Structures are given as C-alpha cells and as structure tokens.
Amino acid sequence: MAWIEGHRGGYRVRYRLNDTLLTENGFTTKEAAEDRAADIESDQRRGRFVDPRLAQTPIDEWIRSWTAAHYVSGTTSATYDSHIRNHILPRWSGTPLGDIQRIAVKGWVNNQLRRTLADKSCQDILVLFSMILGEAVDEGKIGANPCRKLRITFAERPERPHATPAEVVAISARMATAAGLMVITAAYTGMRWGELAGLQWTRVHLDEPDPHLTVDPKDGALHELRGRLELGSPKSAASARTVHLPPFLVDLLAKHHDTQGNARPEAKFVFTGAGGALHRRNNFRRRFWQPALVGNPEHGWKPIQTEMHFHDLRHTHETWLVEDQVPRVLRLQRLGHKRKDIDDFYSHVTPTMRDRMLTGLQTRWTQSAGQGVAQELDSAPEPTSVVA
Image (cartoon, rainbow, N blue to C red; front, side, top):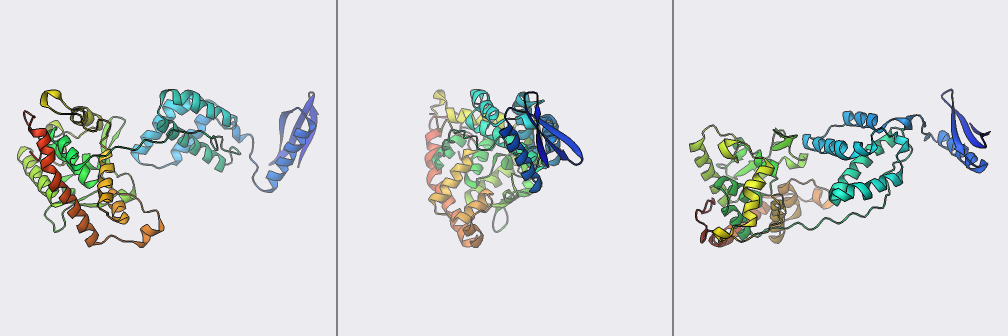
C-alpha cells in the first residue's frame, strides 16, 4: 500500500517494500502525489514495480556487469569496448541508471557524437547504449529504456560502389602478383577480408572433382584485435562454408601455390605480405589498394572507382550473381549469409545451380580479362598482375 503525506510545503509518497519503508519526495501538488501512489500500487500488483534504489546503480558498475555476462566474437568485443571507452563512459560515467534521461541522450547524440562522427558510427553507438540500458530494464533496475523512440533521423547509408570484371582485372594488374590475386579471389568468391587474409593452404582443395575453399568455423578468419593478429571464427555460423571455384581461379591459385612453395616451402597462409607476414587491413589498403584505385599518371594509370573499399568486392560479387540470375538461396550460401525468409528454407542448393553459377563466373573472366589487362599493360613499365 502507498500513501501520501504533506512535506515541506509539498507532498511525499511513502510505501513499504520488503518490510522497508521507502519515501519519494518532491511532489508539488497533492494530485501528482496521489497519481504516483496509485502507479506504485498498480505496478506492485502486476509485479512490474522497480525498486528505486536499484536505479541508483552507477552506469559504470552496470556496464561492467553487462560486459562480463556477454559472449561475443573478439571483433565485436573490441568494437563494443571502443564505443564504451571512447564515447559512452566519457559522457555518462558516474551517472546513476535512473538519472539518464531520454532528452539528455538525444542531445548527446545530436550535439556531441554527430559533430565528430559519421551517422553510421553514431547509430552504432546508440544501438549499443540502448542494448545496455534495455537489459537494465529487464533486470528491474530501471522502469524504461531512455534510448527508445528518440526520433533521430540518421542519414541513409549511401549505395556502395561495385566494379566491372574488367575493372577488377585492371586493379589487380597494378599490384604485386599475390596482392592482385587476393583482389581477384575476393571479387570472384565474395569472401570477406578476414576470410582471405586468414586463408590457409590446408583449406584450399584444388585437386578435387569440385575445387573449393573452406571457411572453417573455428579458425576461418583473421582478426585484428587491439593491434594483435589472431585466427578465429568467421563473422557468423552461416559464414563457415564451402566456396566453390570457377576453373580460371583454380589455375591461378595452383600457379600461386607452386610459386609460393618454391620461394617458401613452409608457407602456411595463401595470401601474405613481405617476408610471409600476415596482411593487416590498413597496410594493404595503403600499400596496394589505394594506389591501384587512385592511379599513376607516370604509368598511364587512370583512377578507377576511387571511393571503393575492399569490402565492396563482396558487393561486386553479389551484383554479378544477380545479373547472372543465380537463385537467392545459392547467393546466401555463397556469401555466408543466414537464411531469413520462408522461401529460403523451402529452397535448396543443387549441383545444377552451382555449375551454372561457376560457368557464369568463368565467362565473365574470359570475356573481360583481356580487356582489363590491355588497359593497364600497354602503358605500365613492369606489369605485375597474375594475369599478365
């Protein structure tokens, strides 16, 4: 039962919770105090009452508990940690959970985060903060999530660029042989950066009737965590998959294997940098990717898709498959995406589908390779592409 009392020129609400007498002060009118008392009694009857003492838990303490209770991939964990250390705690550290107001969160996003960060980053930080506070609601520490229904309009993500087969060949021709082959493999398999950078020769099966690469569920991807490289699981369970290869790519990888084996018989990884070192994303981008896209007037190289990221080669692969009318169920499987729609569960990948897809990829290569190489090699002083 809750009741009201006059207090210091206003009113207060009092009630018992587990044999403890609690008080809420600061009501300026009798009506407001009576409404609060009625809400308390209603929430207690429905088992939805939140002990106000729990709302005094500092956000720092709750984040430590929340983090300790979660299991996510190393990459996701590093992302969460970065958002918390660099953006969430600098603003909210020391604040009790119950004192985080909706309008203050909205102001933080609009007037602080958006001044220095892209909308996509702001949205990711807000989603994480909402996740953290949402579980505080579930644990009965606060009554509502102040991140909900903020009505913040974030800019839509721009459509990512994709390359033509000839552009892929031209980009690869501007790189060292192994780096160029990595680009071609990405475009013609749709594999992620980490899956390619961590690809081991034991996962490459070129001599089988259906040549393929395997993304292992335990160590099928290379991750860079706080500056340290380590093998681990791919992005999701669906990412652990078999990636079948068109004939031309089988030949290129076999040639690369022979060349690498002669130079370094102990080589474990397919795509490596200087001295057999593992690739780091930023180093690859600076040394190979950006110079290839920007071009070089001295070599007669014109710019190609200068806004494209390495990850856009996945967009490129998906676009090619759509153009070739590859069934959705096979596209999902090939790119390592989870099935979501009902139709995805009622359709199945067949060898006929796969053969048609590989034939289409082989045709693209055959028709475009010569064109792409010709664009670069006529003027390049020392062509280095795997297709030179």
